[in-house]
Length: 295
Ligand SMILES: N[C@@H](CCC[C@H](N)C(=O)O)C(=O)O
Image 1 (tube, rainbow, N blue to C red):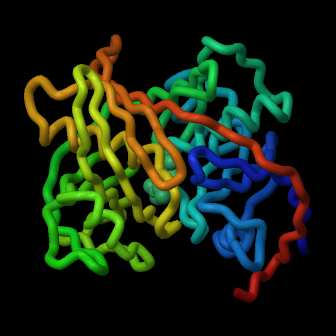
Image 2: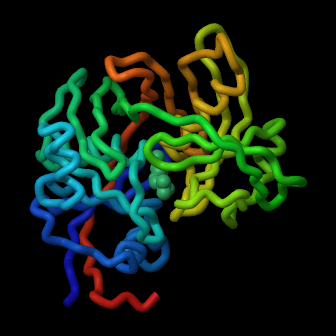
């Protein structure tokens, strides 16, 4: 049986998503159907697909609601290849904008809402020009060697966990970053058990309390994208760790699709990393998904 989906297309600094709502959890899409929706030539096109579903209607939602009973909405995130991911830093801001536009959420500037994700509950705050998300505690630990097309030799990478897995590699300068060919997934050795998003960064100037970074990313399950929010947080955390004592807690990360803010701050639950940036809704449409996808 085919299924009709009413969707909204949105993006955060060029990281683009197909969003649809399924409040009662009645729509189960196969990975191939999600990939068909995300296909840029044969479908709507996007780096990911996001379903808005009530936490209480999902098996994963039980843990979310046990942690925070106010997390009514769950961001069911899938990469462009159909694989599920724990978290999406750009996606959750666009998710907030989508819930507001659909009338599923009431959130004034300055207010915060709890959102369920596979990586746990995330607190999302509405700012004057977008959203800021508390990505929670983080882990910066573990080394790997990373090779990529047009990189002369394999480089050391630092593993960073912000709910989903990342490996961050520092490059010497802009020329090296621009020359990279990320049309193919970088090879990470030893291979992370669940795969990883790989960020290539060029640390820039640190002026006072603020550090700057340029970044390109190859996302697990989606390929090279114009931006990755959790990747920007991972890039800032790795650069902060390389810089050592006295490194700034606030960072601006420049990605091909724009700029994101990252800050590290003490909270009642310890050190957390926060991500801020825009969230844009671009257009609405509807699409019929076939039960059996041939591609
Ligand atoms: N683009 C996202 C990350 C999406 C998930 C990622 N590809 C993964 O598999 O972990 C972001 O903005 O954080």
